[in-house]
Image (tube, rainbow, N blue to C red; front, side):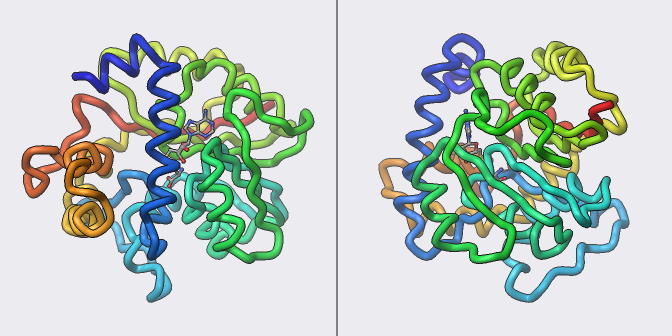
Length: 267
Ligand SMILES: C[S@@+](CC[C@H](N)C(=O)[O-])C[C@H]1O[C@@H](n2cnc3c(N)ncnc32)[C@H](O)[C@@H]1O
């Protein structure tokens, strides 16, 4: 309830609290376990083959599968990509290693997350910059791909972000985008997205796939909260991790929000 109130009526306060919370994750995650911060994706229960992963990546299967689901729509070879809100860089590293674009820049407004990523990932062509999604500091027409995963819900002015995405994309460049919204805001969100003026290639409601991933990844998330978060903040972090604050072992839910995925192209 409080979360919804903040999102809808006080987006700047919500954005400020969000930054504090993500800075805190980088402070408490001493063992570098939280390199992804999304709810995840799975389609195994619908008969799809599990994504083949390297043994060391298996622990991050569900959040990695969300990146894979979003990224697999295009051919990445020779592309220059920007990820806005790259968090702790797990997705950036995954895309570089599995899809092999020419270059990939991750941007986030958490300076600790950026510092963490710069120390953690040493891959040719992968860089991280501190910056705000609503004021992207890159020239016009500079990227073939812009990625954005589970982050735009926190931006106080989504239209500014969309304008920057369109500006920095090269002609024919792709915007690969996934996020969630409260049910009553879905229509306006879709209208804002379509008002960007990019061609819509694909859109999909993936709520059921995200919920199933949250269920399958629940135990790992509970253990992360128990291990790293001071007891007084457990409820807040259970909520943050997509678990029910009072009964984290119960079925996860998205608080009446729907999760969508889009592929758009600049003409
Ligand atoms: C749920 S996390 C997702 C991170 C990453 N995409 C992932 O899936 O692991 C949301 C991220 O958005 C970032 N963020 C929120 N508001 C932002 C803004 N205005 N500009 C840049 N980054 C922002 C946060 O710091 C956080 O890293």
